[in-house]
Image 1 (cartoon, rainbow, N blue to C red):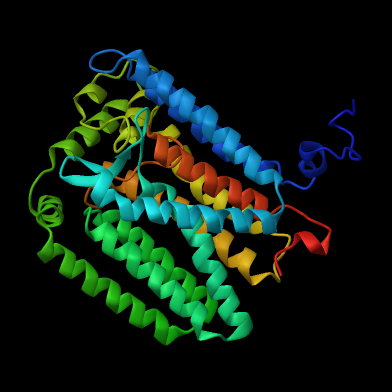
Image 2 (spheres, rainbow, N blue to C red):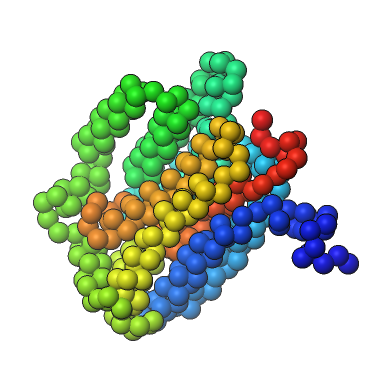
Length: 367
């Protein structure tokens, strides 16, 4: 039996391990362990040990998926992501029929033993598919590729509006716009998309009561969740009160996902919280510096957008915890509780690591 440490190992793991940038694995591992500690600290009061065990199980599955997709070739991964994108898009379309409502939103489908949120799982694969069709248009100038993209975007818009999930929809629209800007490099396009974004936000404010309520509370009054989150952060101070010693965390609604940052700061301190804030842009920077295919427009733009969505969702989650922006219900990537969220970001982290691995054979590179 060959030793996996030898470079001539031709097994799936051995033949790919030396092509991977090992440092890119570090940040997902750190974030996942932080999430485990934060969820474990909630056990007691209204949270049972079951929430920790379920989170741990989701984490194991997510890392298996992350590791698996780093090993296959770039072209095979791209094809797999396109298939997954269509599959999750079909599930998104089925949400109004088979989904169930939670707190005014119909976003989940019950699969008997577990529930999934298609809009979460769709993020990474849809970014790759959208980027691929933009890339094909740049290469061939066939307008049909752009039309496919706009058709896909319209489907996503319509079915996220029907849930309604305006926060996630804004995230999708931001990424779609970013990809167009990256591929077309047109300043006029940037201003057009920015104007359309502002118009959409204004329309969402006047069209959806829950959006108007959240914005009005943010601007003119106090949000109970955010107020308690800030109190927990203040209680933690610079160095925190210690693992499991935080008390204010029990009074924060949805503390295990939307406001998990407050739990971490209360128990580990503001310095540790700033360290978490730093991890997401650090992954972005390391990924940028690890790109071995700078001439490959698809790889460059896709990895940029996948890293961007990690950073922007982290900013949204942390920003809502400290009252920088209105609460949106978005999770902290690879830290918050949630199976769909964990699997979604396993796909994203794994895809970035895969696309940035050094493949010497031209046949393995996306052309």
